[in-house]
Amino acid sequence: MGDLSDRRARKKAQTRALIRQTAQELFAERGFEAVTIADIAEAADVAVQTVFNHFPTKEDLYFDGRTPWVEGAAEAVRSRPATEPPLVALREYLVSLLADLAGRYECDARRRYIATIEASPALRLRELELVHEAERRIGSALADAWRDADGAPADPATAAALTAATWMAVARVLLVGQRPVLEDRDGAARSAATMVPLADRLLRDLEAGFASLQGAASVTGWPGDVRRAG
Image (cartoon, rainbow, N blue to C red):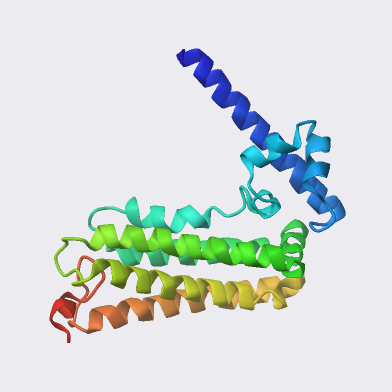
């Protein structure tokens, strides 16, 4: 039974990968809006329902495998060393992510990928939904890290949700706001040179703002006297 289950899992993964590769090649060739699920199924030699079994929407197909940050930021908080404050782990991940994504704008394929998103209301909406999903995951990871920890806020879930939304907003505004500048290689290089240090400074300022309420950073990265505030 184990071998049969493993073979089925491998076959399922192979089919999913084939559908994704086929779809993304068609999107690059024809444009996102011009490609239908039926087109993808025909090119991949699978049934239309098979496509839907793996990907609920065409937008999911476009982004699949291209948004590791949806899980990555929360995972950085969860997998950090025990002595590292959660906000430090989150800042370092987001700054590294921005550096990586900004650097990729020098690649023609990356610029086409972003141009396709910008030209499609459906893709822009799905991208925003993915940002919100990343926020929810970060909020959950921070709440778990702060729950019952010394110096934690009285309401870890609310504090974590506010923190996740604020920090993701910094990353998103910097990156998305720079897209018009990033349409050429020179603009991409100039933007990357300024965006990453700015992100690091802004996020460090947010860390310091939390810590300054008690005069020193706690192990949680949240002011220890929040419980007594108000």
